[in-house]
Length: 324
Image (cartoon, rainbow, N blue to C red):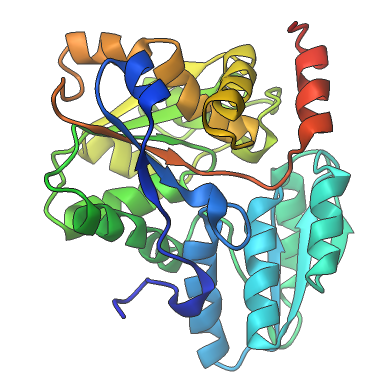
């Protein structure tokens, strides 16, 4: 088992061609279905690996700040390891996730309005004896765990893709995919990093040429809601072929609904952001501009998933945004 593969905590997720997304994008599109991971998102890769390494050092309790998916991954890993877990979530985290965390045996504390507030509380709790803080996205072990996704792509594809499309929140997935591309010699493959307006901390940092903090998280894609992207994510975006794109909340939610119709899979708005890039035709524009590889090179979209959504939540999002 290669380092960072997360052992028994994550599965080798399916890589399937999507006829509907291929038609919309104008090139063959493969879906890396991270939504079928045991906790519903890619987070189990990096978080699971980090928890395993911390357990080897004798920790007794994990503490994590999370908008939802990182906390679920940590709670699952803690349960598998027979250890205790405390997850601090902001008030924007919905009851679906809070109940799932408790069902996994985690102690849940609600603190603050956004993830940044919850993170400050988690850092306080982690000072207790025997506790280890598991950062949801900004740690080398997390990136190493996430890099396993790219090794799976290398094993499944006949040739390297024309681009990897993914969503960006705090930047852990971006940093992990960047590390994975380097590991397999695909560092020239463009990464299309997609955010929603109101949670666009990477895009703002790239425009400024330095880390900046958004005044608030106003996007409905709460799992993309880090006011400041990680320094490592910004570094990756400056060193590799990273194309930053931002979509509207409405586009992300419309992509969620269309993806549900096309593939019978329900994902969060954070995942809908990456899908929206394909459905809206923006990938075609990037191909025409030469910023990503054109057909016949295939494109991989990371369907990052998410557990904070159900049919009622999708209806509520559409109503909130005034969508039919």
